[in-house]
Structures are given as C-alpha cells and as structure tokens.
Image (cartoon, rainbow, N blue to C red; front, side, top):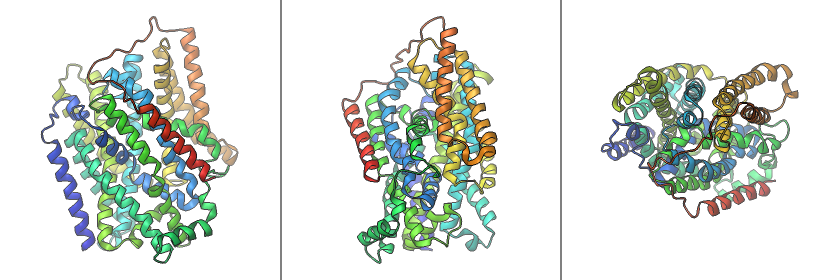
Length: 527
C-alpha cells in the first residue's frame, strides 16, 4: 500500500507542477505549442534532454546488456557527451541562426520540399514502428516487474504487459498532445531531479547488499570477483567491439544528439544560443556520470541474481524490487514512470510537430493557419499513439537485447539523415537530387545489409556500427560526386532570421574541450 501511495503522490505532483508552469503559454501558435514559445533556459533544456534520452529502453536495456557483458556498454553513455559538445559548438548556432522549428525545415531551405518530405517520412516511420513501441514495451516491462502486476491483478504476464502499455501510452499522450513542448519539458525537469536521486540510490543500495551492509566492501567485492565486467574495451564478439567506437558509434551519437528531432527540439526551443549551449554542456557533463545509473546496476544484478534471471532485460527492475525499501520502490517507480512518459511524449510531440509543420501545412492544407496546423497535428498524434500502443506488446522477444536491437534498427534512418545534414552544412553547391538519392539509397542499402546479408553470413559479417560508417562515407562521397557533376545553380547561403540572439557563450569551447578530456581519461582508466 505504501508503494502505491508514494507512486501516485509523486506522479500527481509532477502533473500539477507542469500544469501551473504552462497554463499561461500561448499554444495556439506553432512556436508556442511546438517550441514552448522559444523560452527554455539552460537548466530546463538540460533536464529535458536527459529525461528524453534516459528512459526505460535506456535504463532497462543498457543495464540488461551490462548484466550480460559488463562496463563496455558505457560507450553509449560516455561518448554521447562528445556528440553533445559538437552539437553545441557546431550545429546549434546554425540551427538557431535559421530559426527552424524542425530539422527537415533546414533541409527544405538547403535542398527542396521533396527532401524535407522524405526526411519527415523517415522520422515518423522510425518513431511509429521502432522508438515509440520500444519505449512503451520497456516501460511496461519495468512497471509490471517492480509492482508484480501479474500477481497483483491475477493475470498472465502478457495481459499485464498490455495493461501497462496502454496505461503508459494514454497518460503520455495526454501530456504530449494536449500540453505541448513546454509541458513535456517542465515535467521532464522535475522528473530529472527525481531520476538522478533515485537512479543513484539503486547502485548504492545494491552495493550495500553486495558488501553485507558496507558500500565500500560492495565495490571491492564486485571489482575483485568480477574483474571481466570492468573492462571498457569490448572484444570482437561483444555487442560493442572497441574498434566501433571510432567508426559508427560516433556517427550514431552525432545523429541522436545533433539531428534527431525528438532530442534537438529541446535546444531549438532555447531563448538564445547561450542558454542552448549551456544546457547542452550541462547535460553532457551529467551524461558522463550516466554509467552509474545505466551500467553499474546491471553488474550488481549479475552478482546478486546470476542463474536466477533468464531475460537480461529483467535485471534492473528485479534489482529495484529486491534492494529498495517498499516506500522507496513507489517513489522510484514514479520517477521511472516519469522517464518512460518523457521519452514517449517527447517522441510523440516531435511527431506531431513534424506532421503539422512539414506535411499537413505543406501538402494537405497549404493555407492552414497556425491554430489549424496545431489542431491537425494533435489529431495525427492520437492516431500515432494508438498505433504504437498496438505494436508495442509484439516486440517482447527482441533479439540481442532490447537496447542493441533498438540501435541496430535505427540505422535505417539515422545514417541517411545525418549524411544529408552534414553535407548540407559543409557544402554550398550539392543539389537536392543528391540528398534524395542518399536518403533512399542509404535506407535501402542498410536494410539489405542488416536483414538480408547479415543473417546469411552470421559472425563473418561486419558489425552493424561498422556498416553504418561504411555507408556514411559512401553516401557522402556519392553526394559530393553528384555535386561536382550537376551542382546547384547558386551557392546556398543561410539567412539569419533574428528570432533569437545567436551570440556564442564565451565558455562553450573551453568547457567542451574539458568534457572531451574527461571522457578520454575515463576510457584510459577502465582499460
């Protein structure tokens, strides 16, 4: 009973705070609804970035991989900090200079409307078929395991999963569709504080149990008895071979933090460039500490429950249930519930934005006013949410672990989109046809590679992160060749829309360099 009460109390508190903070925001306009009125400050941006990223597919999935492989999976966390620094220094100034609402808006200006439509379509397909269902599934698995829903309701594991998926989906949809970006961002920030506190509590309580009431003894036991779990360099047969850190891993990170609409939308909503850069740098620094929350608990769970857990993705929720006092299980479940909602409603809000701005107003109703655009975007969001809730329970048997499966599937659209954005900013004459070919060819070749050739050749086939790097280089060269043969008639020049101040934060580069040094040192230490 205490668990349920503490869960409901914290969840209700977050909802009330989000309502009070957003009730005066004008959400009848695109900027008001989609970008929170371009008013977000550094702390809100950092909190929202972290919570959008740090959801159950991250916490449950990465800890599941750590349960199986150890600390080497920290690459997904620590290397993200470098990508965030690159985004803050290189991409964000260009985004805010153009005053864009969505990443595809830049692609329309740089290439043409067809390129924008293809990119928006790829984003929306990826969100509906991959990201949203996986967030719902992983969240439902965590809540069902922590609260032991099957036993509590007297239903099967499958029925409990469906109940949790639809419960999370409906509440998340209300936040995202009817609250707009600012409601999402404010609730994210409150939950970020709770998640950092709760997330750090899990390994501390776990180490306390491992060390027989001593945290330091717990650390000593883990490192002494499980030395193989604390090697950062992955072998050739691991999910992240060390060489991939220098190929596809950094490309995936740059796509995710620099071009993924669900993430970058928080920085696009900054009140000015300084606040956006501060928010990204703050989030990057906290991200370096991420392995304490999304890797270490998996290793602790391995020490405590090896032989008892057959599905690695159940390691984290099992650890939470077993090591936390009942009154704290409710609080942490509420925080985790907030993280689940964050990733779900952030991706859903971004989908609503992409559909309303890039598709509805461009191809369905060109004369639509701001209010109509927002209204139709919300309707699309409802359909998308329902579709993802239907798909989610059917991905229960994801191969190679939940998180690895998510990253591999994302390659179908992440690398093609990253390619055309990078080439778009670094060149002036590459034409729209080159971007269209790169998008279509990139998606098709990657799909053939991973779902036709990889199963055929098995272990002899290159790792999917290497494949991403190969296709990225191929597509960039292809675009440059096309640009040489058939260049644009005129140079592309980005105009300054003056929607926000783009004065650079003077400490951006020094602090960014410091963050990169910390990441490199971390890897050297764990070698």
